Length: 229
Image 1 (cartoon, rainbow, N blue to C red):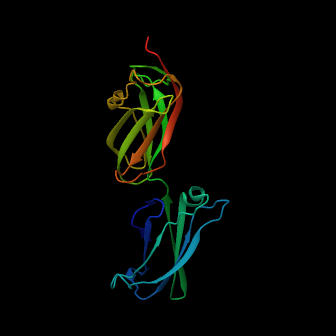
Image 2 (tube, one colour; image 1 turned 30 degrees about the vertical axis):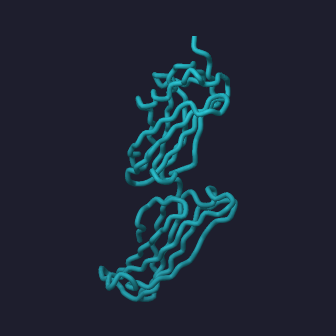
Image 3 (tube, helix red, strand yellow; image 1 turned 180 degrees about the vertical axis):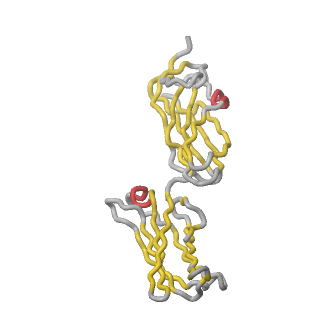
C-alpha cells in the first residue's frame, strides 16, 4: 500500500492505493477495506472507513484506491490533526485475511520554529543602537521527503510599532531536516536614525510558498533600541 506522498498539510487531499496480489498475480474485483486513523489526542481522534474495488479505476492492475481530505476542526486543530496518521488495508483472499499498514505525517510542511536576534558573529543580542545592523537567525524545518521552496520574509517594528525595516530571501529548504539560515542579506535590516528608542521593538518572520503561508508567523523580542553613541 502507498500514498502519493508521505507528508501532508492541513486540508490537503490524500490518495491511497492498495494493490492486491496472490502468489505473484494481481487480483481484480476484490473489495478492500481502508481504516484511516488520525493521531491519538485528548480532544477526539479522527478516523474513517472506506471500501474500494480493485480494478475499478486502474484497469486490470488489481489496485484499489480511495481519496479523502485532511480536515481542519475549529478547535484544537493542530493537536487533533498534526502527527502520524495510520492506514490499515484489509482484503479477503481464498478465506485468508490479508492486511498491510501505511503511515504518513501531517503538519506544517515548511515551518519557522525559531527566530533569534544575534550580532555579526551569531551570538545572542537583545540591544541594538540606531544605525546598527540587526542580525537575525531563522531555524526552518521541512518535514517533506523532498526539498521545498520557501520565501522567507522579515519585518522589524520599533518601540512605537512603526515599521523600520524589512527583508526577504528565496531559498530551497532541504528535505526532512531542520536548517538554520543567517545570511548577509540580513544586514539590510539597519536601524534608521528616525526609529523610536525603547524596549518594545519586535521582529516578525514569515514563510510563503510564495503565494500563501507555509506556517504561522513567528517572532522575536521584545528587544531594545538605543540612541546612537
